[in-house]
Length: 203
Image 1 (cartoon, one colour):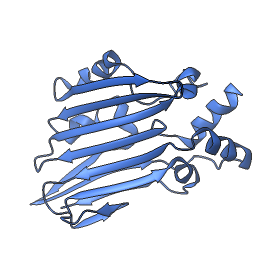
Image 2 (cartoon, rainbow, N blue to C red; image 1 turned 60 degrees about the vertical axis):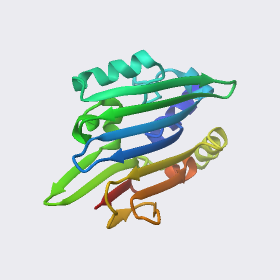
Image 3 (cartoon, helix red, strand yellow; image 1 turned 90 degrees about the horizontal axis):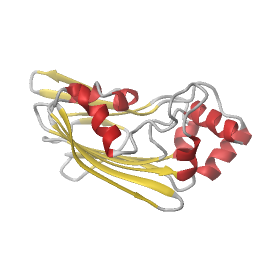
């Protein structure tokens, strides 16, 4: 059973850490804050590492691990909040990160899979991130049913807050003032996507 679950997790390539709420606030110069709340199933946490030797959990689960992962930025990316709680079902992590530039944030190992990009063309700014990657190979019906049962109720929410009204965007809904782009999806949608899900905003 353990080997099957690890294999399914590898196939799905969840950059989401099972359940995640992400709120990225960006200033015009590319600095800003990232607020993350992620829920990790105790079952998944107990799996430890996959057959490749890598952790099945793509984000740190302790303050020391988180600070260690940010140390490579040389102070350009800083942990300003870290709270951890547990119950019988989940481990819940709440963090806030301040960054001097999105390029510095993108270089942190924990965010490599998100493929964060920031482009400036004159007065225009464009931000993009990979919400989820398409599975490298289709899941079998049995694997899909098992994952749907395991991860029922684990949703993904991504919010980008821009300093100016967003003129163009993908994946999501704009707020009335067009400064906030929100995209919500489910583990089931991630499992069945046939292409990478890329969220972008241009202002």
